[in-house]
Amino acid sequence: LGSFSSSSSQFSPLLRDLKSEDGQKQLVALTELAEQLSFSSEEALISFPMETFIPLLVNLLGNPGCGDETTGQVMLLACRCLYNVVDILPPTARIIVGHGGLSVLCANLLNIEYIDVAELTVSTIELISEDQKVQVLKAGGLHAILTFLD
Image 1 (cartoon, rainbow, N blue to C red):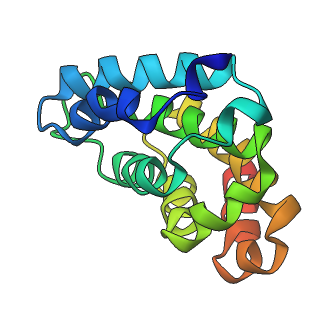
Image 2: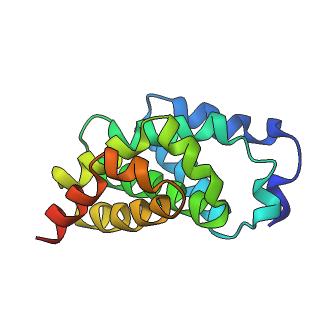
């Protein structure tokens, strides 16, 4: 997908809506971002502003909103975006780790609210562990996954 290869200004509307307090705007932006990422390539992601989006995605996964019907969807889409980014460009695992993403992912496994989010969280931690083994262990990733599987 070549949509990431132009300037980062194309991401301004998505960024604005992800930062919004309006859960519906966040949901629409996350849906669009998840779709773009799912069809993306390593070449296309090179120009994607990771340092801007990853902290927002981690925050949305950890603090998905006001507990309404969109909460589970926001968490799932934020996790899916993180998964896709690491799957396509494994070194981005360092950015996720650097912004506290592992502790948020582990917390989601230790306090399961949505099973689909938990299942995707296991896959995301697994991908991160390929590049950041020690950090996953230090963050309690193995414990969280074993607890989830139990």
